[in-house]
Structure formats: C-alpha cells, structure tokens
Image (cartoon, rainbow, N blue to C red; front, side, top):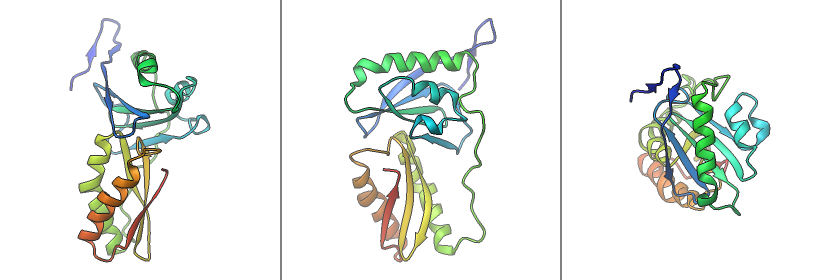
Length: 196
C-alpha cells in the first residue's frame, strides 16, 4: 500500500476502525506499517510506555485501559463504563495527528521472538503450529499470541492486545487453540494463558 505525501513531505494517514470479539477493544488500522512486521508491543498501563510516546499520550485519555501495537494497527482497550460511540472519534483523530506529525510510535524496538535451537522437538512443533495456524487468526482480531512455556504436557501462551480481558478469550483458548494443539500433538494435555 502506498503512503501519500503532501507538499510538506508529511505522511497522509488514513485510519479505519475494526471491531473485534472483545467489546471493549477496537482496532485502529493505518494505511502503512507502524512497527516492523512480526513484532508486537503490549502496554497494560502508562508505566509500561517508556519507549512508546504515542501509547503514553493515549493513556492521557481517561477512558483508555490498554494499548497494543502490531504491524499496521493499534488496538485500544477502553474502560468498561465508556461507550465506543462517545470516544472513538477523539482517539482516531489523536492517532492520525500524532502519526502525521512524523513522531515515532515506538522509540526502542524489542527483539522478535526467536526460535531457539535448544528447544525440544515438541516446543519447536508447538511454535510452528502457533505461527502457522493460530497467530494469523488472533492478529486478525487485534491481538497477539506467543509461546511462553511448555512443561508436563501443559502449554502456556501469552495473550495480548484485544485478547486481554476479552470475554470470549477463554472459549477461544480452550475450544480453538487447545483442541488444535491436542489434535496435532497428542502429548499436549492442556493450554493455559497469561495476560487475560
């Protein structure tokens, strides 16, 4: 997707909003990449935004509860007592103005999750299944999933973005992710989530 530039060499940002299964989260999708492909950044509170000036500003809105960056979108989770109809336009305009000003959304990139040669064969298979089958669906809904640990047949995953606090994340975890992993790897006994 081409990014338009106006006469002042300023990016023209087009944002659209996407709802997802978490009624308290909304995806703000830009017309170009905001962070490098394959990376994600989760900000559960203002204290975690040291290297994320836009996220820090978004926490300045009293109704923002959590901010998540990935690829070309920002997922914002609102506090439950607010309605999207009342707040989405102000958030969209703030994000658009911030990005068009040329300021960075993240000032220090964190390393991507890497495959570790010392991983057991089972862990390598789990990571492969997560990457191929599960991550794309979770990302489509404005969230992220990453491998956390594997011990005694139990897979622990980290859920971020719209998955955090989502009423349907437990169902997704058990009915979707756990069933798929058990079907593909019979040694898996269960899946547990961090971050929800």
